[in-house]
Length: 363
Image (cartoon, rainbow, N blue to C red; front, side):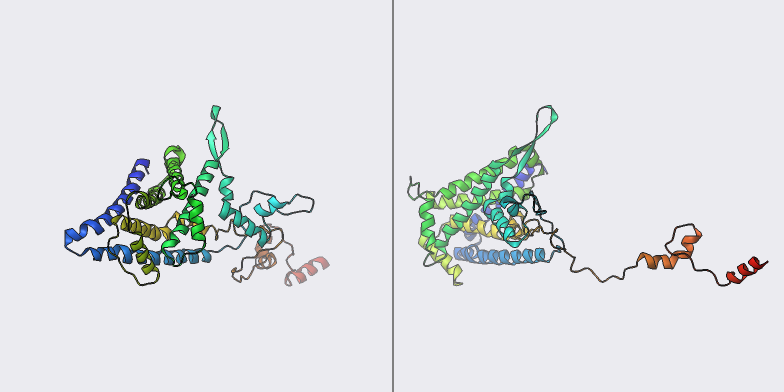
C-alpha cells in the first residue's frame, strides 16, 4: 500500500477517535438535548469497562490458541555453538545463546525480555559502492525500542497513584527519579519526553527508510499515532490545561472498586484521553502489540536446544501398522521375479513341476 495512503488512513482514524470523544462529551449533549452526565457516563464508565473486558478476553484467547499450537520438535533459533564434544568450546555465552537446559532458557528469556538481546544484535542490509551488499548494526533501533518500552512502563507505574489508595511505596520513588531534573512547575517527567522522542524516531524510521516504508501498512502506523495522541493529551492535561485531579482520582477509584461515579467539573480533555486509552486496550489483543505475550510462547526462544542429548518423539503420532519390505516382497515376489527385479528370497519350487523335471532327467 502507498505510504501516503497508509499515513492518511491511520492518522485519519486517530483523528476521528479524538473527534468522537470531543463530540460525544462536549457537543452531543447540546445537539441531542441529552444531559451531559449520560455521555460522561458512557465515556468514563461504560467504554473503559468494555475495553478492559475485551483486553483480558482477547489476551487469554490469543494465549490459549498459541498454547494449543503443536510444537513436537525443538526449533530454537541460535547463533552459537551447540553443546557437543567435551573439547569443543561451550562457554557462558554459548550457554545463554544456545541453552541445553531450563536454566539456560530462563537466562536467555530474561535477556530477551529485559534487554532485547536479539534486537541489539540486529543488522540492516545496505547496497555499497559497486553494487555490493554490506551489513551494518542497527543500534539506534534497539535504543529507541528500549527507551519506548521502559518509559511506557514508568508512565504506567506512575499512573498507579490514580488507581490505588494508599499508593504503593515505589510510586513516589519512581516519580522522584523520573522528575529529578526539575526545571518547571509542575515537575517535568523525563519519561514523557523520552516516550515522545522514541515514538518520533520509530515513526520517522518507517517514513525515511525506503524498504521499511514499502512494506509498512496502516496497521503499522496506527499504534504509533494512537500512542502519540495518548501521550499528547496526557502532557496537555499536566502542563497546559488545568484539570480536576481530585475528581479524576475519585472517578478512577470508583472504577477500580466497581462503584463508578462521575464527579462534576472533569475536563473534556480527560475523557478524550481515557477514550484513546480504551481504544488501545481493545486494539491490543488483535494487533502486533501482542508480541508482549507472544515472546514468552515463541518456540524459537523458550525451548532448550538439546536434540543431541534427548530424543524427541512426536507425542501425538497415531498408531500405524507398518508395512515392512519383507511383507511387501512376500506380497509381490512373483511379479518382481517375472519382470526381473532382484528379490531377497527366491521363489519356492513349484511341486507340480518337480515330477516332470525328474522324468526328464531319467530319460
